Amino acid sequence: MPELPDVEGFRRVLAEHAVGRRIERVEVSDPGVLRGVTACDFDAALRDHRFREPGRHGKWLIAGTSGPTVLMHFGMTGGLRWVDRGAPAARYDRVSFVASEGELRFEDMRKLQGIRLARDDDDVRKVIGALGPDALAVRPADFAHLLEERRGGIKAVLIDQEVIAGLGNLLADEILWRARINPRRPARDLTVTEQRALHTQMRRVLRASLITSRVPPRRSWLTGVRDQPAASCPRCGTALRRSTIGSRTTVWCPKCQEV
Image (cartoon, rainbow, N blue to C red; front, side):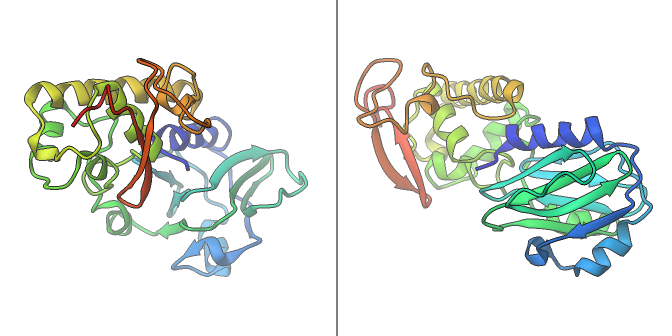
């Protein structure tokens, strides 16, 4: 599932290849990924406009143009890539922004989220205005305040996009494991020391993940071993436990992350 580092990688693809390019046309092979706009209107709204420097907030890619803004959310299986003009379509290519020098292609197998067209700043705010602060930018004091306001377990709070934007299942488990905090601990019960540790580990994990544009599957990380049969903790060797929290498969070490 694309999380903050993945979306930052997609932002870099757009920034490196598409900024300044004139959109000759938009080819929509599957309108099922468009939200609130028809394929015809989407194409008409973007033709002859040029991509500007893109932004990102949490898991949302904000692709501004000289006209409307394109908002992309990649759901569980989405992606973005730059290809040569006229390159053969991949199986799950849904939308192609065609320029003379190449094509920016949005792909998505499951189509759980998709693409929205924002014609002005008010439209952008309607889509992403309810999100919490970006996980990479939130300050320690603000982070602590957000946790203290929540009654739920810390894992569920971390993946709630209206609290902190950008963290998904893998990142949340990795950060909690590194901070030695049980995922079921009530967020508001964390000590000041635990709040600081959690924020520090969140920053470290995100910065390391940005380098590879994904949560790296290193064997020294929880994410590098979590899917192995009979997986054990990379830190202490204890057998990992698995449960469902907030409708997400959650993995933790019962020794390192005692309640």
